[in-house]
Amino acid sequence: MRTRQSIDDKRWAIDDERRTRVKAKVEVFLKAGVLDVQGKAIEGALHGLGFGEVSSVRVGKTIEFDLGGADPAKAEADVKAMCDRLLANTVIEGYRVEVG
Image 1 (cartoon, rainbow, N blue to C red):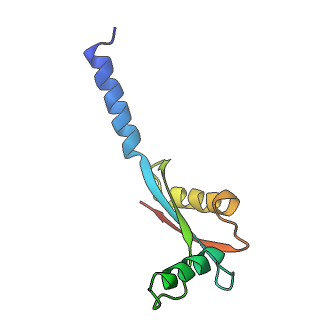
Image 2: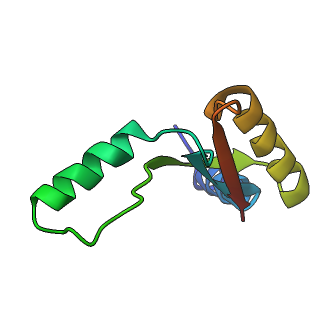
Image 3: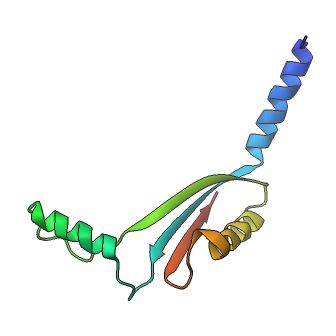
């Protein structure tokens, strides 16, 4: 049986863990000069719907997650390493990182 103290201790531990986590947001996009096939398809569809003023459509992706640790500089370095190793194909894609 749980005591009131053990429940409170667990609640404090969860609150401490949330405080030591940072939010990360990564935006991945094709580099300039790389043909964006999805962007071209969307642009054509928008033109077909009567939005002829639309041009230069580019499609990317946004990845958001929580990351443990209270040091924002280390978190940003870790997220950049994640991008270089997995989240972006750095041959044809660039990325922007926000940590906070």
